[in-house]
Every structure is written in C-alpha cells, then in structure tokens.
Amino acid sequence: MAADSFASRLVQALGRTSRAFTPLAREPSGSFASRLFAALGRSSKDRGGVRITRSGLTDADLREADLARQNLDDVNLADRQMDRANLRGATLRRAHLERANLTGADLRGADLRGAGLGRAVLTGADLEGANLTDTTLRYTTLSTANLRHTRLAGADLHEAELDGADLTEADLRGARLGRARFGAAILTGVNLSRAYLVEAQLGHALERANLSEADLSQAWLAAANLRAADLRGARFDRTDLSETDLSGADLSGTDVSRANLANARWTLATTWPHGTRAEMLARSDEVQGQPGVFRVRPPAHPPVEVHEHVLT
Image (cartoon, rainbow, N blue to C red; front, side, top):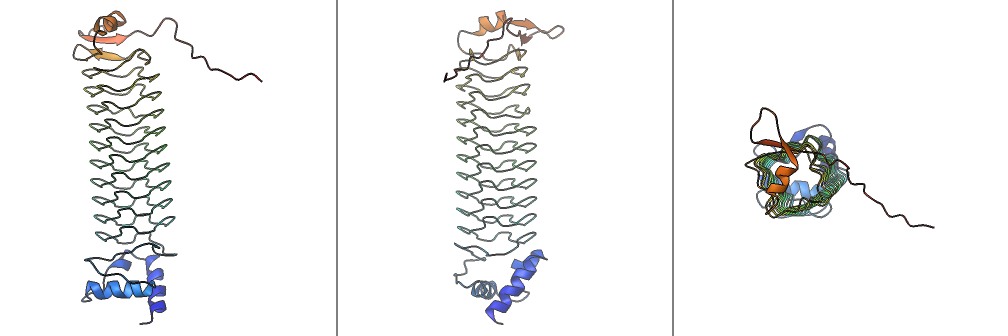
C-alpha cells in the first residue's frame, strides 16, 4: 500500500472512528507501527505500542480516537481536537498539549508528568488517578473534571478554572494555584500543603483538607467547610475566612490577625495559634442551643483598606 494512500485513509478514519489506532486483526503490532510511521514520513522502533514523537500528528483529527495505553512521550499535540478521546493509561510525559481540546476525554491513570497543558480545555475530562506531577496547566479549564486521587504535586495551575471539579484526596503539594477559581469544586481530603494560593477563590467543600504551610494571602474562602482541616503554619494575610466552619480545625503556628473571621464558627476542638484562645473566646458568642460551638462576632467598625494613588 502506498504511504500517502495509507496516510489519507488514516486521517479520514480519525475523523470518523476510534479504531484508527487499533491494529488490524491478526496483524503484528510492529507491522502496524511500521506502516503508521511510514505513512507519517518518519520511523520509530516499536516498544510495545505506537510511539509518536516531536511533530505529532499533523492535521489529524483525534476526536474519539482510541489511544489507550499508548506511549506518546514528547508528542506534539498542541491545538488538536481530542474531545472524548480514549487516553486511559497512556504515557504522555513531556507531551505538548497546549490549547488542545480534551473535553470529556478519558485520561484515567495516564502519565502526564512534565507535560504542557497551558490553556487546554479539559471540561468534564476523567483524570482519576492520573499523574500530572510538575505539569503546566496555566489558564487551563478543568471545570467538572474528575480529579479524584490525581497527583498534581508541583503543578502550575495559575488562573486555572476548576469550578465543579472533584479533587477528593488529590495531591497538590507545592502546586502553584495563584488566582485559580475553584467555584463549586469538591476538595474533601485534598492535600494542598505548601501550595501557593494567593488570591485563589477556593470552593466550599474543604473538610479534612491539608492546607498546612499554604500561602492563602488574599484568598477567598468565605463560607467554606474547613472542619478538621489542617491549617498549621498557613499564611492568612487579608484572607477571607468569613462564615467558614472551623470546627476541629488546627490553626496552630498561624497569624490570623489580618484575616477576616467575621461569623466564622469554631468549637472547643479547634486549635488556635498559641496564646490567642482567650482572645478568640472574647471575640465570639456561643451559638444558642449548641454548647461548645462559637461564632466570631463581626468587628463593630470593619477596617477600611486604604489604597495609595499616585498623584499626577
């Protein structure tokens, strides 16, 4: 079969079916891989699966493509249409997926360590158990994505959109999440220790979350459920903690003097910074009918933030 004829058939097939990357029946995988790379104008040694490097699949439409368990390390798939693609268990280390459309894609258990996903769209994608350690996800859309148990340690999610995403017990240690928007995201049991969350808008479901040593300066956590959360050593510079539930939370080693705690709830099981428990009792009222539950009173005169203006 002529190489360019095969390439034409391949590109056409990618627009219609998810079987485009499935070897034909009774055809050795090495033979299929050789035909594939010959059609794409380059060669590669077969190492147990199709391996695509450097230039990617030029002009290929990968919507609903079946790339499960394929080795796609270093591949260039930037700007590709890959919605609903099956990438379950695939390896995409250091892959270029900037601006790619991965809406509804299956990336469960995929290895994306060091990959570039800046400005990519992963709305509704399933990334449960995937490894995105040190991945770049700046300005990426992850709304309603399944990120349960996903490894995102050291990832860059600056201004990422995570509204409605499920991050239950996800690992985001040391992740950079400045100005990230979590909206209605589920963050139960998430590990955000040492994370950079300056000006981030966190979700409400943060029960048992680990935010120890996280930088929460100017972050918005109003009305968040922080029951039994680990907040040891976190930074709260002008952080909005109004109406939060801090029952059983641990705030030891922090400075909450510049945080907004108006109407925050807490209990006798809450650990306040050393030497501030008496002050917090004096600033709070016991909730009627709920012995041992307190609510911080709003300040009589809320502080006015003064902005300096350059006179011209």
